[in-house]
Every structure is written in C-alpha cells, then in structure tokens.
Image (cartoon, rainbow over all chains, first blue to last red):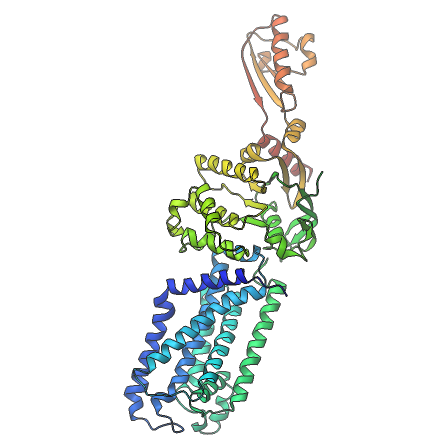
Length: 255
Length: 314
C-alpha cells in the first residue's frame, strides 16, 4: 500500500498548530478542570475517605480523571479537526489531494491522539502537586493511554464526519462519554457497588477502560486487564473499519 | 492532434434526489491550452470539475488524466492537478505562508520555500505572507487560493469562477497571471460567468447546459462560424424599397424607409468588409446617409443565442 509521508505530516503539523493556536481551549482548560477535581476530590474530600483496594482515595481517582479528560479531549479534537473543513468548505483541498485514508488518519487522528497524550502527561505531572502516587506498570500505562487516545481519536473522526451541525458534534462527548466515564468507576470501585448495580455497571464499556488504566497504575482492577485491552483493541479495529468504509463510499465526504 | 491531457468519456452524475447534473459528457483537453467552460448557473460546470478533482463521485463514464484512469491511478494524476474553488474556502486564521506551505506538503511535495516565495511574489502576496488570511481583501483571498493551488506545481489547473466578485482592475490582473501560467506550460480549464473573460483568454470554448456539452470549438472558429456583424445606416431621405444595386447585400429597410439594416459576415472581419462595400455602393447609387453604426457580435451574443436556441428547441 502506498503511503505519502509528506502529506500525512502536513495534515499532522497543521492540526497540531491549530491546537497550539487555541492553547487555552485545547490544553489549559482541560488541565485546569482536572486540577480542580484533584483539589476537591483528591485533597479536600479524599483526605477524609478510606483507601480503596489499598490505594489512597486521592491516588485512586487519578486513572479515572485521566480517562475522563483523555476520552473527551481526543474525541472532541479529532471530531472538530475533520468537521471544520467540512463546515467551511476547505475539505475540497484534502479530497482533491493525492491523499488516501491512511495519510488522513495518521494526520488527523495522530494529531488528536498526540494532543491527548500531551494532556495526559501534563495532568499526571500536575497530579503530583496534589496527590502522592506511584505507577506500578509505567510501560503498560503508557501503552494503554496511547491505545485509548488512538481509539477515541478514531471514534471522534467518525463523529466529525457523521455530524452535520455543531450541536451533533458536542452531543456524544457531553451527553454520552462524560456521564459514562463518571458512572464507569472514576470515583469508586465497581466491585463495591451493591448487587445488581455492580453487574449493571459492567454494561458500561467505559468501566473497562477505567479499570484497565487503574490496573496499570496500581495493579488493582474491577475486571481482568486482558479483557480491558481486548475490548479497546476491538473498538479501535471497528473504528478503523468504519473509517475505511466511509472513505470507500465517500459517505458525507464526496457528493 | 497530440494525446489529450484530460479525456472525459460518457461522464454522468445524478445526485441523490434525482438531479442529473452531468449527462454523458465527452470532452478532451489539450496540453497547454486555456479552455473556458461556459454555461448558466446549474449547467454542471462545478460538478464536472468536482468529478475530475475527486470531490464528486461520478455515476457513470470514465476520466483519463495524463493517460491514467482516474478511478484507478488517482494518486499520481491528482498530484499533477490543481484546483481553485469557486468559494473562498480556506482556514481564515492561518497565515498566508502557513496556508501555502500546507498545500505544498499535502500534495506530497518537499518543502520548497524558494518556490513558495516566487509564487507569492508573482501574485503580489509576498508582503502579506505573515498576515492571517481573514484580514485580507476578497481579491487577495482569491489570490491566496490560487497560490495554494500552484504550490505543488500542477500541470493541469482548474479555475472555478476565478474572478467572481473581483473588481475590474483586479480581474485584468488575474487575466495576466493566468496568461503567465499558460506561458509556463500549465493547462488551464476555467469556468466563468464573464464571457469577456473567455473571449480575452481562452484558446477553446465549451458551452454546457443541463449537464450536456452543447459545443466545443476553437474560440476563433466559433466566432467565425457563429459571429455576425450588424450595421445600422440612417439614410438622408426615405427609400420606398431596396435599390437593385444593393440587393446583393441582403439589407432591409425599417423606420419608414429611413433606416437600412445589414446583418451578415462571420465575426472575423468579413462583415465589416461588406459594410464598407455597402457604403461605397450607397455613394455610387447617390443615396446619402447621416450615420453608420457597426456592431460585431461578441462571444456573449453567440453564447446567449446558442442557449436561447437550445431552450426553444427543448
């Protein structure tokens, strides 16, 4: 398969420059919001809470809060990245260029995932000011964060092609991803929920993501790490397949 | 004739909802020419360009560019094609330099600042290179789009209404720039509402209506074939009928015999020569006249007449 590295890099660089052009919205705002969670739930309320699974409450909520930001920001960044050219008409240039699905994904999704990773690094660094924590499996954590960032950037890309209004663009991150992340064990362990709510909570796919990341941090999880990894890889594969079909059919891209 | 740089055969496009925008279009574009595609709104001009450039999925037909089937070998062909769209569509918050750099990279070209500098200078945009596009005037924004389209050095350039909304002075400047592109060997296909634009620049003209190509010809040949000259002669005194000595000119009398009308020629000088002969014949016949007004039909007259005839036929 032919891959035009220069084209992919041009898209990637432009998307990254767009993020830095709107640094307050793209980077500072989510970092500030997450820091406030650390202050309120980690330091103020967390100091009065019992440890969960042997982990202090302040440290326990870090993977969940990280996941909350990662899912929301990578999805929004990727969806906005492809939606805006469609909205303004500048998509003509992308469609008329010698660029296929691979270059487009590396450019748009790679940039959105990179922004997610930068945010994750800043949030983890910021967390050290408020909470004392230690990552048990740093390589696994890094890999898992990258996997989730890439998967949800792909998901956001699909969202940006599907949406035909700014309202639709915001619906999924705000009305589905955020509530599911809150209910997916960000602030509590699903195993501590009374029956049948512990089983009901596992119907929430985000719970597997939070659990997987928490395992990489502290070695404790609500579901086996292999299940979390498997589901994330399956989600990524589904997103790539959907995008390949979109490009083949031209759905919402070519008239 | 050498191998066409672009060959379109039986190209059709029916949009969802049933609108047939292109109906079995056949068209060949020669290397190095300026081809003007003329047609009223909704004729299919932009759809035709979109189909070649990958913005529109044709429902039938084939497009061959540079000898390669676009449906198969689209990457190599598209790298050699540039497009300036009708709408002023660009990231308004980018600087001019970043916008053209992006276009160069997007089309797979290595970074070449010297090339971009030359393009921006040729389009009088060099002093605006670090300015955000949103603060530029409409004419400058359009030139930015041209600069973006030229950044990867296309051999075939589509200009969709390049001077729409541009003032007369700037329009003439753009004509010069388009002529300069042709000098550099770029093949140009332009759509325009300004017939004088096609008349000024085009080597060949195609007329499209209702998704069908009505006519394609050399501009000169089209004007010669369809062009006419009209002369209005106000006579010093009324005539009861056309004198036998003037009958060969096919003139007619109006305004109670005080005005003589000549219609003929071919738009390429023959009509004017006949009017001169007519004036001499009037003098020889002792018929005085007070004024003589000659009007050659323009490409616009031909265009309007052609579309009018087709509409009547439909």
